[in-house]
Image (cartoon, rainbow, N blue to C red; front, side, top):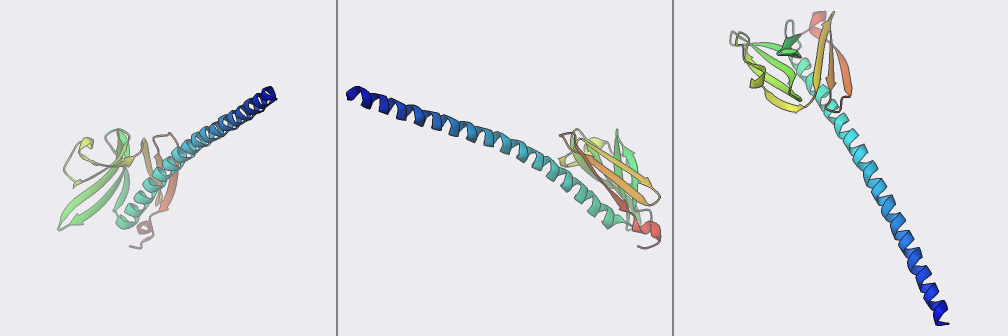
Length: 159
């Protein structure tokens, strides 16, 4: 009788150990999946933030001669022009060293790209202009690229 009680106890402990081990495996698998989903969501959020920021800048500066695509350092750049009290200024947005950078300066002042202010993580920025349409693509540090196209209203004669 004592032998049967020992076998029943050993079976219950083994069954509990199997259940606990499987529960731990499910939890670890779920945590790994969550980390992957969170990393993808974070990268997509950074790209959306980058594109929304650039779209708002373009909308703010959209006037005749106010927005242009250019090159700054070794990167494509978005150049936003304005005149303040008779002096021309340019805000240049570009990528450098894995960061989206912004540099506000007088138009005739040649500052190096390192002078800019880092805004957010981004591996590359592509900017092109064709017939009043500005195309912007932002590549995240994960290598994924998202883009948008903006019609410059100032090209239609509206301010």
